[in-house]
Image 1 (cartoon, one colour):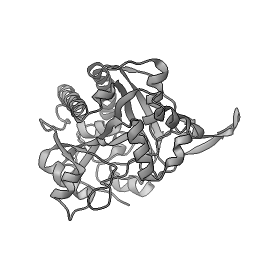
Image 2: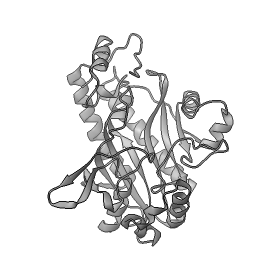
Image 3: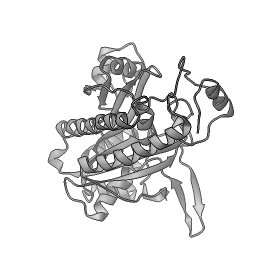
Image 4: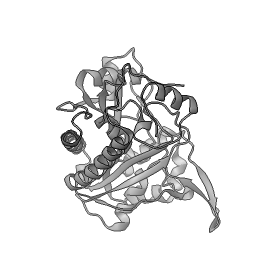
Length: 335
């Protein structure tokens, strides 16, 4: 069992107060997020047909939950991992224009996650996507968007402080940008996770860019599916989290692949057979809009702002019995 138990941990809010705070954070953040990013909330699916190629392959190895459906006997139905590709298709189908976008309340099951302080088999996040022009597929667009999201999260810190001053975590004043190759050059003898912890501890909040492609060492910093993020224009937002003495990823996002980068990344990943899937054919034929998008973990954000030691304190899921027992002994009450 992989579990961190902070010494003298005090949640500072009761379970019922925590539930109230979770609702406040979720309601307030999504309104502010939609307004500041010019995003409309839309309904999103819990599952998709495997044959569409719309499900997110994440790091490329996770197994989706799959089942059959009486009405579609020839189809395999998959519970979504995320909505990265579905959102881009929705922007096309609903007629969104450059500068306009959408967000959804995305719920997913990731059966291969190993539960610990930061991970659950149940995922809840705000999945968002925005139409941009081809000319806007740049590092400036990416960094400006990241700075805007950071500003919205900082605003939420102040909002939560007004209602729960005894519980809110103080966040850094700025976000630092660095590429995965620059990070490897800085700490060549460290693992990717160790590098993330070192740079995030130093700066408080970091946007780690260019994730997915191989570095000089011959290995990628982390895996990324080849058919949604452009590996040269993506990254993760990381906050230093003293309670667990580690970096906490709040968001993974990026400028999405165009027809050229999709073709290149499918070749690098050995996944060229995906070119025959409907979504990929449309993208290669330039039938889909150019976009930027990502996901912001709802429970992760609540965990950060309320300074909680385990994601199970802000999310109802399934936890091993021994984990629940040990956590309770240390004042960590899992839902």
